[in-house]
Length: 264
Ligand code: DDQ
Ligand code: CA
Image (cartoon, rainbow, N blue to C red; front, side, top):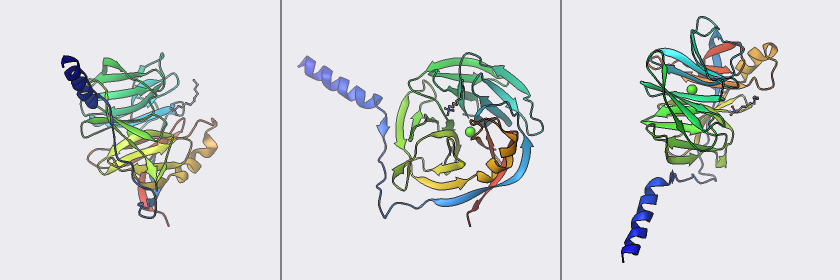
């Protein structure tokens, strides 16, 4: 009797630990057709062409960037390409960056370590380990949203970074892989698709792609000034308060304020 109640309580406990898989939307004629949008350049700002941009994030009124390869966390500005403040992270490959208003959370690609930063300097508060790859990160309604190069978005508890739920991202019923840098907006999460000129807007609850944004005008603008094959669109930040939207890319010399217009 005791054994039965133990296994029962264990299985009940495990219901609590497994991330909930949200309902995948059905494919077929009823599937929502995404909006087609174009990112038009409103303003062009300087961006450090040696920055391997992996995350772009407003935090306490300032713009921060996470850079990969031999990376860092840096505070940047719209006035100059050179960063205003840099904290080198030579032992890991930094990735997505998110803010909850108080803390900055920074992923690493394959180092399975999340860096948590606090304060206006900011200083490292702790490191949290996790399983799998880290690509993009953003903060929405008390949770950290992570991409890992697959079509799955995972929703983490910021306290210990455990996965609370996950959703598969689909475009008219088909999973979309290589989701990279993220930006949590009120009505959906923006995501770069790695090595494309497209940013998607995704519904948090269903994973459905609500809009496909063509950002190829930006890539065309920097094309003659970048050399690396890896110099791809990556970096999305929305300014709290104004709603201004900024896109950049890895090793791009420009950071763009964009407006989204319906494709013609
Ligand atoms: N990711 O950002 C898509 C997650 C990874 C990009 C890795 C690009 C390869 C760069 C080569 C670096 C060599 C240390
Ligand atoms: Ca971002």
